[in-house]
Amino acid sequence: MELLELEFSREIHPVDVIEQVAHNNDWSFERAGDDEISISVAGSWTDYHVSFSWMEDFEALHLACAFDIK
Image (cartoon, rainbow, N blue to C red; front, side, top):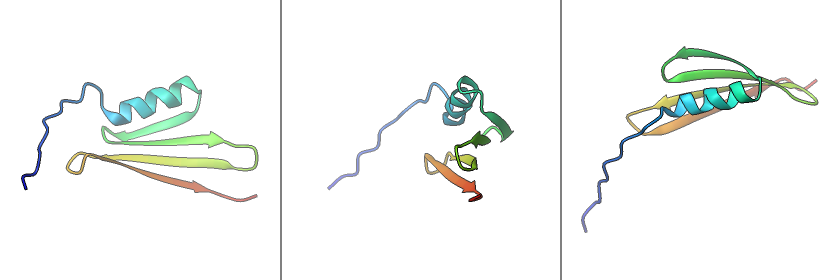
């Protein structure tokens, strides 16, 4: 059995897409680099702090969410 390898060219960086979503929703965000973004979102019961990291080698977007229960 052969493994199939596909060539794929990405037109827009995944973290740029996340930044655009944050901007469109008026969420505060900070870019720590080309491959990282942190977003703060006010919720009904708590504030959410969400971090995204793009890992090019794995073509994966890592997501982490932290919040304090009030």
